[in-house]
Length: 452
Ligand SMILES: *Cc1c(COP(=O)(O)O)cnc(C)c1O
Image (cartoon, rainbow, N blue to C red; front, side, top):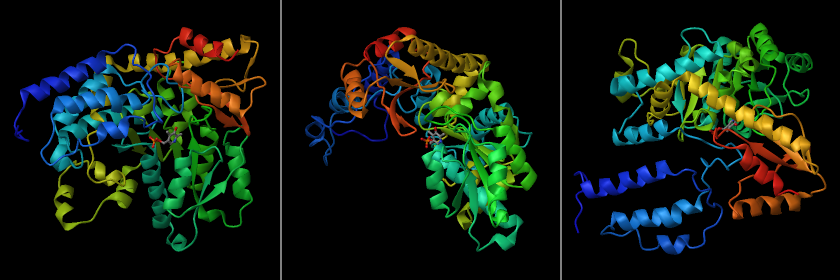
């Protein structure tokens, strides 16, 4: 049967909408399994043909074979890496974004969606304590956000002091910085000045001491702090580091990809007061701000510095730079074409209100604290350190690497939880990363009971 590609097909639309309705209504979402391919290759074979296939048949393969070979990151039992818990409103509106073919590249093409996205960015900038005029854009993830900000940090240093052109530049970081920061430094060909930490935190004092010890401090032009490390939820001394950065005219970037949501917390928001010093920061709404993938917010104190680095010169693009009051997301990161990926969180934040978001963030911290208490009270378990935001590191006394690995595999096989071990000071330990507000105490108890 011939299927017109650009004509509305009511039957196929019903098929897809019904599937989406069903997926959105699953409560709870099944955990399922990643990391295997059994049955998948056979199932995919022959589906890609010159003539095309029946959409119902393809959706069936997706439902029964493809989607079940993916661990559901939005399950409340997904407690590894950094989970996700997109709100229902954000998932629904993501479908609207897709159906509307929004190209969020330039003001000329998409002023409406960019203005709405900027409403969310302004909210985040204000929570961070940045002055009016701060701005940025949504990018695909924290890694692209870090890279985009750090290249601006590098270029601003050279713009301000042309004598730095041609010299090796360094950015101060601690060994706790996310792996994407190390990758970004390699990409932009900048060296790391490794600052020793104090209980895994980068502090202003340690930064000062490190700078005092280098031969050529003028070449250390930026410092990167983390607000909520991925492994342990630790927040660097943002006040102290920010003050040193200000004093020395260094660019101050904060990687708050995971932890930045904590700015909204009614109990832990104060830990982020030093964010007001930043020149740039990132926070991933696709992590703890309950947005669908892929969505990271990138903010600059002085967006003009970012535009000086990122604006693309091409004669066919000149036309996008001629308007008044224009805001082109492409001028603030390494991308050009981009999905209007901030619209899903815009809709959701407006629907539920910011108080509901604060409460949902608090819920993740509360369950982490509750889990820590349960661990402390259990005979064979020990807390490695107090929870950092919503992350809990703990050990099963007497277990070796293999026992942790076997336990983790069994938990997933039995669909009790997805909890993978991590390393802490060289030791293999267990780690909970909470953030789904529907992860219950009973689920945590059930998981802990498997470690007896
Ligand atoms: C997740 C994370 C990143 C990377 O973000 P992506 O969205 O995965 O690219 C960077 N830094 C920290 C602290 C993170 O937790």
